[in-house]
Image (cartoon, rainbow, N blue to C red):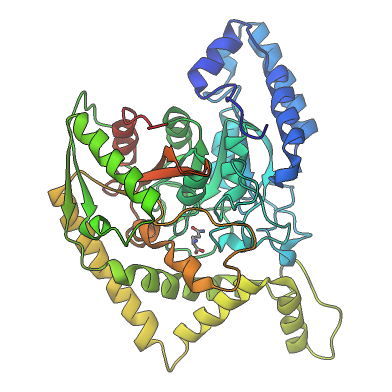
Length: 477
Ligand code: GLN
């Protein structure tokens, strides 16, 4: 069985069991390692840190048995993994790309460091789309990861394996990254929670860059509680990332009723796939039954979201990925007569098709002749979007929508239709264009047993309020 009842969904319960000696860290490590082995066919892990995790589990058990809990950090007993774009000191990291196949990181990402400082245990590194570009986890040099609910289907992407690793209970949480939906969309396709914090809430130091003004590390888990714990320990300003910020404290909001807005276009039955439309209606009804208000809001920029996102992210990617030239990092093509051919050959051999497509697109929109028409115009649309969303948050507390307008597709499908795949990002990318915090929550399942998730987005820096407000929402399943 791929998808099993998770052993733990809550860190509080897990730590209570450790305290009461119902379970040991070592037993838990062995359980997760056995889950990793029995789900090997889904192609989730690129590397498993078995020896490291067993040693650390034994160390924590000793402290627990001696009752010296003050020696342990807040996340003791938690097992987590990291997407292949978040660096760990002295360990390989490859962004799912051949070009970084033999690369080892010299430092750890700030987020990983902060989580390890609190005694969580890092169990392995998981697959993803190359340089986090994609929506299906098929653009990886390690091959596709499979959806555990139906193995013929994609798990979503780019943090596809992160979502699968949680869904099949190989860990309590996974660190993913979200530039335009890469945490939330796979979370939705695999039936787990996935959160993208406000832009800057977590340091990007040690996150391999795709689109720097969009990129954000995020969390996937079985519960909001675990995500909240991870956010609390890893958030905050970092001297190593000038764009990092402090987010607001959690306000206490007992029994508060909210106003949820949704883009009025979602009422049009053509916009959403049939079963997603139905699931969204059930979600809205459930909020109303809980005493909240739900209303459509006017949003005229919907058609511009995907083009703006792809112009700006490919532009940023073409600049960020210029460092992979065969000299400074990773793969180098065999000797050529002169240096330019060496650059070209290294990049030609090292990058996959989707990355090449985006680098060409990004170079084009930044080129002297087209800069004004594309890049500059997209920046202006981004500014309008920031204003539009800020106006919307004067009318509503949160914005809701299904995470995607469509369902997961079959592995192998849509490979020759990138535009169709880009368009499926329409309901996640606005969040990154504006830098908002957003949560994907598992809601229901379709006729093939594939999960459908809902997305709740809040005002900037109100990440902790957003999580608190979602705790009561429940699921339909
Ligand atoms: N699917 C989007 C893209 O391909 C999102 C990727 C991401 O968030 N990293 O760009």
